Length: 252
Image (cartoon, rainbow, N blue to C red; front, side, top):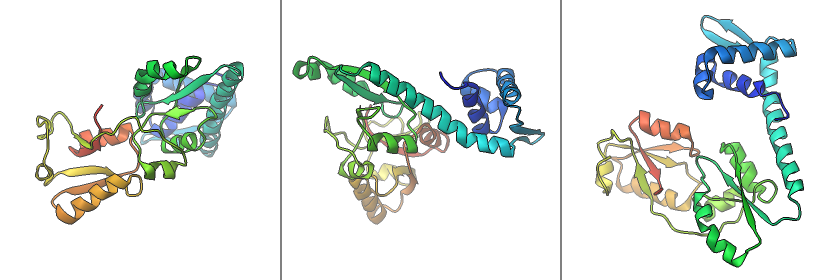
């Protein structure tokens, strides 16, 4: 990496507000996290955190560095990607974006068929952090660092993200629940099964079909409590698990 990797540890601590929580997220020990922060503060001759019995607070210098560190890390990653693209210039390579929420397996499975028509093309998997900001940037600029991303979409989503799509399959709307949920053992659900449940749906304006479903439920099935969410992420799945909700999903 071209940047100091301690910056990523610093950002994680700043977001978590705790050395212990950051250590859990980074899969390292709390002393290792503290050591990295101490070294970073020493190298920069800055005090980034105020340690109190209530936890950690960012200093003014720390708050300033948070914004710059995010930019530096992303800029360095983009620089490496551009360098790799320059090295591969002249080769026919399809760069497939992949993340935990948008796995590339469906496209990898189709690759033998694609190569029959385009035998000279190779593919490259490009991992990315699937945050709302990254998704908006990547999908609006396909062809720069990433060429294609697999995902669930309709025309509303494509227009929202300013990109084009090719239909591979049509998937039914399903429900995901915790294994401990009282509906977990059912193979099929009726609308009445959802009475009294908290159903998590993508917010209005993301999908025409989800909006139709939402309107139908609001009008004819007020016994179902609808909870909006903005973006599929691990936090959304954790909310479903921890709050015993029903999450709108698609088959694996």
